[in-house]
Image (cartoon, rainbow, N blue to C red; front, side, top):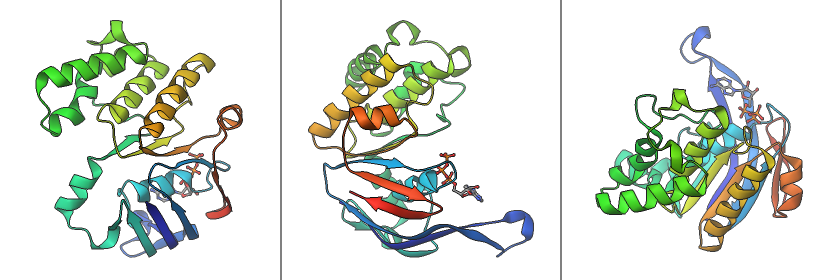
Length: 227
Ligand SMILES: Nc1ncnc2c1ncn2[C@@H]1O[C@H](COP(=O)(O)OP(=O)(O)OP(=O)(O)O)[C@@H](O)[C@H]1O
């Protein structure tokens, strides 16, 4: 279960000196997503979608309000437990965040290796998922040698390879064509059917219509619709 209870967020503006606060980018957000749920996160650019996702994957603390992730009160969690919890969350970042010095294969293998999975299992799962996203012939390529869409598919593969309990994806089809976006949705819905909770932020209205699911709709830092 993911639960937000009257959550507010301001970013600190470094250049204005310590303690200076910007305007509220999230304003009184409350919602619940049950385990195994699927939610689209929609709204115009700047509405606060990425900020909300950062709170879900524990990369940001709220200025005010309570957040529970997988039954854990986020503000009360120790650093160590937060790191353990993060390992159960797959994240597709809007800007991919692939490690530049690692191949596609090693980028995707990283979360499994961090989880100390046996190398034969790493090999089996990484090659299978990279084949699924259409990159079987690019395993050794560095991120710089890949197109934007290929990098996005590596980022997706890395997020799902460990079969996370929670998958958070920020505009995961931004660089994909329609066929690849369809394959990604097949992958995500299959994971979701196996019990992974999924939150996908997107501007892709066609995709939202093709895969009906409850929506968290945002505007100017507020939830304008839920469900
Ligand atoms: N690190 C930051 N410091 C200060 N302000 C920020 C920071 N990150 C985001 N913002 C501001 O917070 C607001 C919400 O940004 P956010 O990235 O969450 O929106 P979004 O809905 O994901 O937009 P997009 O669809 O363009 O990705 C914006 O006004 C943005 O300028």
